[in-house]
Image (cartoon, rainbow, N blue to C red; front, side, top):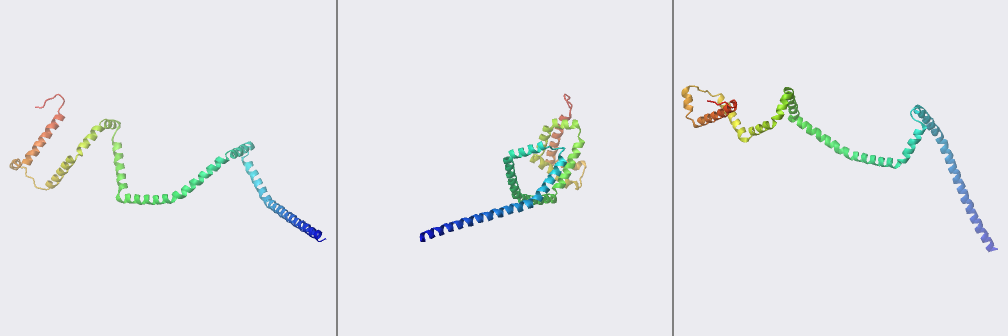
Length: 230
């Protein structure tokens, strides 16, 4: 009897546990059903509003878009889902890059503003404005034939400028200007006696000789071709 009672009690315990488990599952299922019912009750007005709004919007574009077009668009979006995802990933990368670059660009912009202010204070912009005006005057002063001749002789012009800008030529010109400026205010005697007296100066005679040589070369350049100069 004791063994039978013990076995019966064990069976009752197992049965009680099973009943408790089934009751808990039933209660859980009931709670989930109530949750779904409550969710559907809350979503129904939202779904109705979305449906109504969708219908209104579709009515506005129904003359431009058909149901086939929408279905085709949906299918295309579905086929290109991975591409769209990659595009979004790239967009996120670009946004991250922009967030990194923006502070650097702000610093670069501030530095550029400072440099521009420095250039303006030094007069670069004023010089550029004057240079542009000079260039405009040059362009408006030359015709088509002048420009063509300038292009034909540009090599000769550059060579002449190159020779004129040699250090010895520039030093000679500077010394001549300095001498003229220093002697322009001094009293000059133009009597024959004074002139003949200056001829005794070797530097004066050397200058006259060089001047005569230059005049000789100038005369050769200016004389007509084939004409002899007596």
